[in-house]
Length: 298
Image 1 (cartoon, helix red, strand yellow):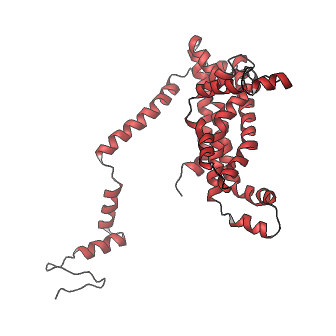
Image 2 (tube, one colour):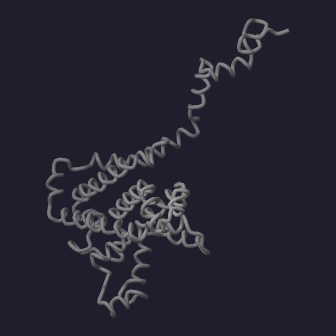
Image 3 (cartoon, helix red, strand yellow):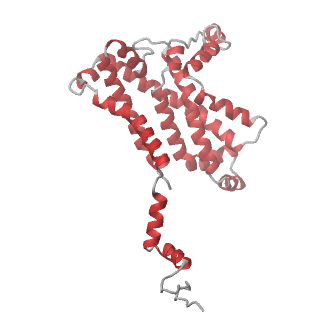
């Protein structure tokens, strides 16, 4: 009969241990377990090489931007009146677009997450369509809808004298169009993860549905709203295609930072690099602010 050790693992004829002991060693974190985990963590070469190529492909342009930056003349470039004008307009318009997205997008996300109605899947698809729609196409669509001869814009012009294309308000509209889906997706996901029993408990205590939303749901989903708002703000700040199509490129009125970068690249590459560094710094700050929510595993 094969002897058993105190763990129940069968010993072989030479005093060693068999498969049972290997399993026990693995579970106990012994040498064999450490070697097994090391083998698990190791990346196979056919996967490692393309992964490293992908990392290089995504980071090399950013490194090149930092290497070629005119660091000595950077303060002078960033303090010019044109740069500050474009930066101020970008910050104001991105903030206004985020505010519009919050006012409209949070109720929309709640509707998609909490209310069953016919065609909800179609509505969700239409809401998220600007995520994959080319921004220039979005600008053309805005012109067809809100331009002077648009299906809604002609009535805004004739009834209220409101003209949106090629105005600062048009920049806000274009940025909100492309940025709002980021907020809606973030808030809807947070709402689906939140326990609806808290709202039901508030309803049983006599709270109306709006009161339950305001006093119970909003505090629960506040982190998701904040994350969505930051993402929407960053997307609005970097918007180019819809803005130049719908609002044009007029300095001081519709020329935001991305448009200023594009214009400077044709005449002053150093100024274009300096403006790009500002947008890069903003993007890094956004990622740093959201790292605990989006970039770490819990």
